[in-house]
Image (cartoon, rainbow, N blue to C red; front, top):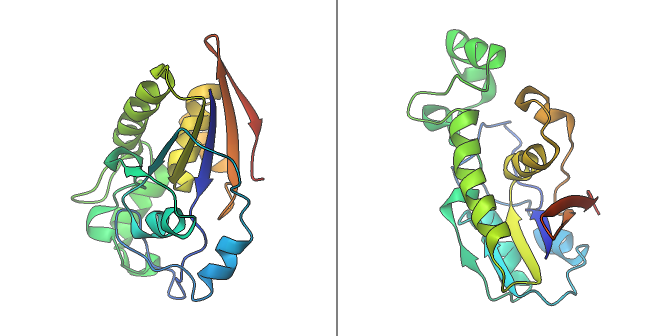
Length: 184
């Protein structure tokens, strides 16, 4: 099985708002961003995050896709759509010190997100009837999938840059999972 993971294109966020679960509009010229993406392959299965920024990409390419809640970005709870600088210092500083275990009120921490993404990933790679799969999702989800393959510490996940509108390709064959390409 070959799995293509693509991150949605750039969002319009001039105020530097915190967002994950919250809907954020794509840049005004998002169609130009879509035109720069090469998606000519035939896919047996296409799954998108239910976030509109992901579904718009799937719709633009007229893909027959399904959505899965488990591949949404992190839920920042009460911080969603607040300026990062407006989040109370006592809350954000705790999160900066331990973003793996600490979460925003009514949100999730990285371990909880990892659990739902891992559940999705393990189900996906167990499928036997798909040769080529496309996943339209978010940087955090893609990083967590790479972390599960490479087994590096969670605190290092932000050392991997996942570019907007770029693909990561993973091969799953005979129980061996390998990363073929990142940010193409």
